[in-house]
Image (cartoon, rainbow, N blue to C red; front, side):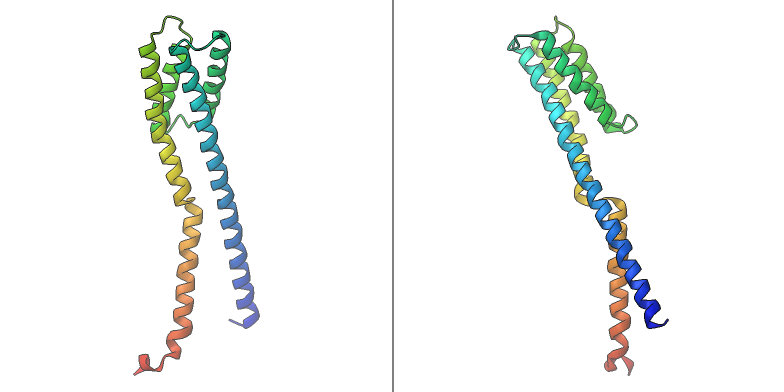
Amino acid sequence: MSDPVLSSVIAASVAIIGLIVSKEGKTSEFRQQWIDSLRQDLSTLIANTLHRAEDEIQDEADAVKVCNEAVARIRLRLNPREKNSQQLLGCVTKMAALNGVSTASHEELRRAANGVVAASQVVLKQEWSRVKRGEWRYVTVLIIAVSSLGIGLWKMFVPALPFLHR
């Protein structure tokens, strides 16, 4: 291959790798924002439920409205096809139902809150692991880039080492 063609191929490869890395980095940023927003809505739902359980809420209709808004945002964020999300949705639905019932006991509300905490920890851990690990395209491009660099260095330096050719 001629030098100009090789230079073009290398430049194009570097540009493609740069695009993929920046796009996947942005995807991870959005995923982190998603995690933070989900955590905020879950804490709003849990806090209002626990305040209601301890009769600390003055305006119950407003508290139910805040909980319903948080539940709607949580439902919109979760994937109903994923098993862990289904479990969290079930716990959130149960808590929402109890928030709408004025006869729900303090213990029922606390149990529902604990269920949401436990299920949300599984979902949040799963998503955080995905952010830490990186998007699959990023990981794949990184492996290909490092492998290509290794092969290139090997091809460049091995022929130049006279002790290997005896």
